Image (cartoon, rainbow, N blue to C red):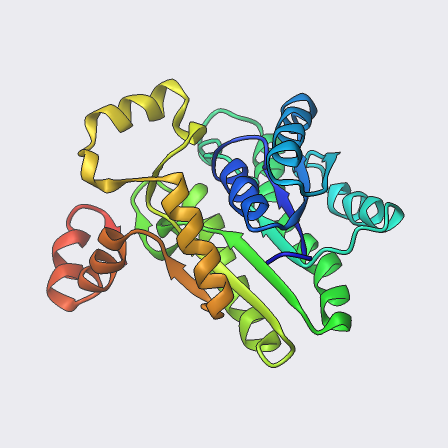
Length: 258
């Protein structure tokens, strides 16, 4: 991956930080994007010093509808061609039927779906001109199943899976790979909220994977041109089994459809 440049959204923590680290180790120059600029600057300094790569920082809030266009224009202004686009920014989101007002939900949908489509809209055409590009959209196994009560997070990830499949098919003969990475439960600060921390403590340890495993598998799948990749051996085994008729009937009783 050396001599290429990767733009990573949500790069200040979690999987985004791990993507930045692994790509820097491979000699890839970076553009780090997130809302927390101080954390980005600290990470940029560490990666540049440790691996000798060029690291640019751009603060952006992708729940803002205008952010992808501003971000693209800023990379052009700085002369930063993007070869790898890692759409990683996201959050667990509010309950669609809860007490939060619609503007909160609209911002969430903007962050999780519309911003990813916009980033592809802006950054893929220059990749086509160069006949090379890699786009990884961080989805989730939640996007491959329907769980009772999940009408926010899972549906947004299902959109990313469908979007990635469509782009992968359209661009496969142009030197551009598009992958929807679908992790299961992963050790990151994504689960730092009180509710999610309780859930993590009460769940079996074997369903959890480390961030470095998820990122390494995702980057490998991207290079191989896999349109959808389920990270974690457990999940790669379980999802096909759950789709078999007897399993589908059984789990449907618990409000799960795969």
